[in-house]
Image 1: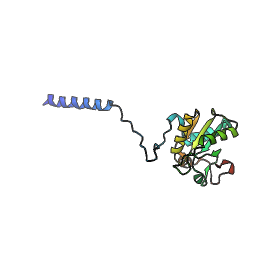
Image 2: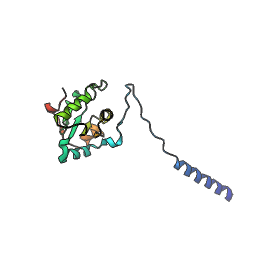
Image 3: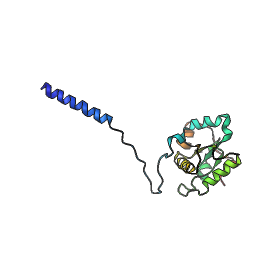
Image 4: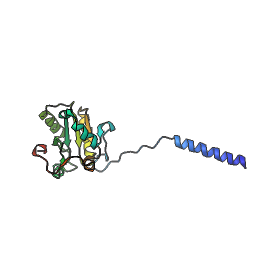
Length: 173
């Protein structure tokens, strides 16, 4: 009886060790009908928290940073972070891609005397569109581009500076 009990205990321990040493199953991203990946798709090295972005913008080198709200013009009518330099929508109605997005970013950079090497910070409602916009900019050769994790939702939750009335200079035309 003792041998049988010892054998069961050894088998249990071996099974536990093997199960614990198996690699975790990776989660896969899901695709919706629009063909776009759901969730924040930007690589982790291109994602910053709202508080980190705010602190980054307060540094003295902030003049070399372009902070863009990529939400639709209708969304920005309800307000935007006070430190946003401009609204350049990534999409117009959450499905229609802004074909002038990269060109509009380049125009804003030129206005500030900056180039592709400048730091770009992008924010949207929850971080999904800004993550896709980051991917597009990376494909176009930009290196220092970052998405705000959690977007406007997190910006407001962190009680960071907000303006209910965007200035005309910030708006997209």
